Structures are given as C-alpha cells and as structure tokens.
Length: 357
Ligand SMILES: O=C(O)CCC(=O)C(=O)O
Ligand SMILES: [Fe+2]
Image (cartoon, rainbow, N blue to C red; front, side, top):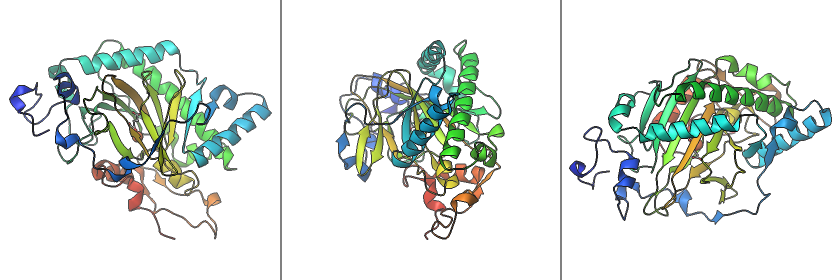
C-alpha cells in the first residue's frame, strides 16, 4: 500500500491501513500493489444457468426415510467428486441467528480502528486476529479484503464487542460443527466407509475450527483486483455464508464458475484434509472472491479441520495397487503452518506433501 502517503490515510500503525479505509477514501484507481498478477485470473468466467450447481438438502440427509437419505448421500458424493463444491439448503441454522451474525460482524468492522487494534496480531496461533489482505506485511500483492479470524474450537474465543456478537457466534459455530459432522457422515458413506469413519480418523471431537469473516469493500477497479486470489482451503470443509451479495467463483475445467447461492444457503467447499483422507477422490476446490465497484460483500467462513495433533492419512480402504497413497502423512499442525506461511505463491499446501506416483 506504498503509493499512498501514509499521513493522508487513517492509520492503525505506521505500516498498516485497512482496505475499508482505502475504499472509503474515494480513490478512483487502486494502488498497483493490489493489481492481481495471478495467471489463473485470465481464465474465462461463466455465469451458469440456474440449476447447474449442485444443491444438497440437509433435511433429506438427516431424513428417517432410508431412500431419501441414500439418494442424498449419492448426490453429495457426486457433488464432492465432480464439483468439489455444493450449496446446502434447509441446514437448520435459524435465520435470526444468521442475521445477528451478519449484523454483528458488520458492526465489528465499523468499530473505530483504535478499538480493533488489540487484535492486530502476526502470530499464527493468536486466537483472534484482525487484519487486511492475507499477510499484508510479507506479501507483494494484496487482496482487497479485511478480515477477522478467530479460533473457535476446541477452545472458544471471540471479540466481546459489539455486545451480543460473542454469544451469537458461540451458537452459530456450534450449528456449523453439527452440520459438518453430519456432512462427514454422508461423505464417509458415499465412499462405502462406515458413517463415523472420517470424524473418528480426524478426531473431530477436538477439531480445530477457524471462523473467518471477510469484508470486501467496494473497489474502484474490481476487474483488476481480487477479494481473495485463487486458493484452496486447508481444513476438511469450509462452510460459507454471505450477505446476499454473491462473489465466490469456483474453478471447474479451466473456467471460473460464478456461484449464485439461494438466500440463506451455506456454500460448502471441499478442502485439503478431505482430499488427503479420500486419497484424492474428492479434490480440494480452487476458488477465489470477486469484487464490485459499489457493493460491499461480507462472507462468514468456517474451516472445520482435524484436531491439530492428528496425523492425517489416506483411508487404507481407499488405497490399493491402482490407487497408491498420494500424500505424505504429517500432523494437521504442520500442515496448517505450511499453509499459513506459503501465501498465494502456490494454490495449495498440498503441493508440499503430494507423492508423485
Ligand atoms: O468470500 C468467499 O466467498 C470465499 C472466502 C474464502 O475463500 C476463504 O475465506 O477462504
Ligand atoms: Fe477459501
């Protein structure tokens, strides 16, 4: 964010400015440090007709009717294998709770920077971090995004302002954990594994659950910058809720597919640890976040992972002579650290542990 004289912008510290502040500053062009140089950005963008992207009805996944359930499990497996993505409806999170979360997070980002400064932290394991881009100090090109990143499980943390947000977040992430457990049951069954196979293998009881609120303020040149550059997520599955403004693009067969989720649906992304456990059958989604010139987008994402001490490995049932193990085994903690340090130079920390067969 070098080109703008620091004294003209509201600064938290001498070398930190939020994208929100930049956006509110009324720039007509973006600083060159935000111009995306990722070659995946040049791929064609498709706005698919309604009904193209898979939708999973959570109430059918938990249905007592065995036929409904088994059909939904089949659809779930197909969505994970072919799209690395699906939209989840009827997931049971009360609409009022989703609204309180969205309003509370909006208010958090609107707090004076002085009040958020205590969360301006650099350490990976600081449980509450507020900041800009991905690693605004170390990276060369910045994402047009501010974030709040919180470790919410196995130990619950959350900012205690604005009032009421912490309690709502506790309820919200509990719902997300229960939904994730049920989705993992379905995913296990779709692979002919016993229902609790994946949850047990990754010690989901002490799962590392990381909540990230992304704020993508209006951008004067949305076609040049990115809210988040193309990447994969490090957990098992990421569940995303947005503020009614779409902006998630998923990469499919060399094209960016724009996601338009039904109101209140969760968008679900299959991530690195699921790819490892399934020995590459369900790959990690490559995705990015697009921007608008006028609209402000907020997404609430929760990455649901193994416990930090779990050594994640391909399920032996999915390994045979024609499917040898595709990934070296390391702890989730080691993986998490690689992911956090690599930035966007590689799409995935998986590149460090993939075995070339
Ligand atoms: O904002 C979105 O829809 C995507 C967010 C995302 O990819 C992430 O937080 O990892
Ligand atoms: Fe992501």
